[in-house]
Amino acid sequence: MTVVDITSESHFNELTTSLPSTMPITLSFHTPWAAPCTQMNAVFSYLSTQYNNVTFLSVDAEAHPEISETFDVSAVPFFVLIKNGKVVRELSGADPKELSAAIQELSGQQPAAAPTTRVENDAKEETTAEEDLNARLAKLVSAAPVMLFMKGTPAAPQCGFSRQLVGILRENQVRFGFFDILKDDTVRQGLKQFSDWPTFPQLYVNGELQGGLDIVKEILAEDPNYFKNL
Amino acid sequence: MSTDASAEPEKFPNFGDSETPYEDKIRWVLTQNLKPTYLKIHNDSHKHAHHAPMRDSVSQETHFRLEIVSEAFEGKRLPMRHRLVYQMFSKEMNAEGGIHAMQLLTLTPKEWEERQGKK
Image (cartoon, rainbow over all chains, first blue to last red; front, side, top):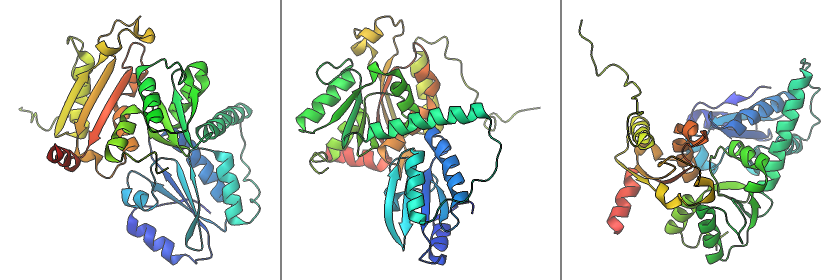
């Protein structure tokens, strides 16, 4: 089976109502400009050839904000797994192994024999290294319910914005994990690609990027209880 | 033969002669792409000049704070709005001695009016 690209909200509704309710559906939300999406689109496409008892639908999250809103999509790539008309699982971020396992579970079947394609050994190894990095980053951003990627440490911040964000988290009595990106350039550069975000500090809540200092200040201006309600 | 100037796409201006080339470019790019109803550019570089990573910097334009009000932000959550802007300056933000930081305030015209009303 191939991935069906959704062209409009009505197209989406038509498709989902015409399918037998016993057929599981998986939705992929992506944007054309986010690097992790390009990788995951390829993974998604490959998985669609492996499980012919699941419908694979793809949605350009920015082109169809109504559909994104319906599923509460705030970061891409984002995957929704639906069984019997109910959302059974949501995955955020680019973790090929996690997505693969989740879809296999949804399908309940063994993956079909891989289509025979000749793969250059070098290219395959490069993909594995990138996959490994993305898998590592996906785990890192979920290492704690609130994760702060900053310059320096909370005890010794090396940048004014990082210092301010730590201050805000402490003021709101938030328990958070932190990672000093000055100590690991692989993570520092990798995270910029992974989350398509060029700057630090970066705050993640439940594995999802919320943004930097400016966004956190905005969120609190609108909702002072944001952290209390997590 | 006369040319219709309004039909020609606006060519990318040369900011090299300006004293504030980054600020000019930011203003031009944002105006072209987002057609903002309100745009304010603050250059906060002097506030960070003493930080260790900035000591070797010769640029006076390293840290910016932008206030942008545009319809283009409608229907987008904050991270997506910010990515939209960051994407326009990825070259400058990745360059050595380029833009080091960009703080953003991104509002739709409706949100902006609501804020003005609250004041």
